[in-house]
Length: 380
Image (tube, rainbow, N blue to C red):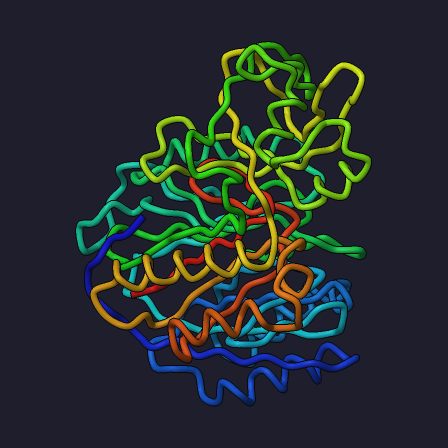
């Protein structure tokens, strides 16, 4: 998803690590230096080690920078330009500037602008929303659908908090449930892409139709036992004594209806039933639905990340001013082999673009919840 209009204030990012939240924030602010002229929106991501101080951190940033509007979240890990902080006390801060009326922060206490409302410059005020969400909210899918319906693009981007302490998300204050974030007008140049980190097991006719199944159990695919179809795709026998080892990196892809890019939702393969040839997956299924088998490993993730970065870079009219990245907890070091490898690939492809973000407990793109996904938003 892309749009292109004018450009605005440069973005600046800073990050810091320290046991005491104020020292971590000060280190981040020293890297930023004086706020860029016209800065009026801040992004802040905090590791869960510092989460209990979330409210104090936002107030401190407001006072220290003079910027009142802040959005962000808590994560087990956070992301900055070329750097990951995981399971340690750290904070990343990014400042940017936008024309008057071209964004509006919203929260459970303040609704987003209405669809078809206009900015002072005449653009749709409610075009695209950056969102952060609480991690224990059963109504989240309905909230996402409702918010999408109130946006001209119908497009959301963001992530769900991941925390072992307070699950705060920030919108000029701290919240633990529902949605918060910022709505951008159509005048703000943006580009969004996602990377699944997977590749289909077979390039030729990779989709299969569920011909029998209920709940999260797939009984048959293409009128054959589901396990037999999977084993055929892997080139092994269902009786193979090492079958479970072969399935370690296998996931199930659920194609997104109406997608013109072959997009699919990645779901876990939770178990197999050798006797009846059934598969158990991490989502509900029904007969007539299509699935594909995909492999999630370092090589597939690397190749798909490069594809995404090349696509988003080609879609921008000029170099990006700043960006936000939302990566699954199952990515990062676990998938790419070493700390900060994922961020290094992004930096190598895009340059030293000011970047902030966090490791999510679920990624949001368009109106859907993803897993094992990286979602990138760039400001042009």
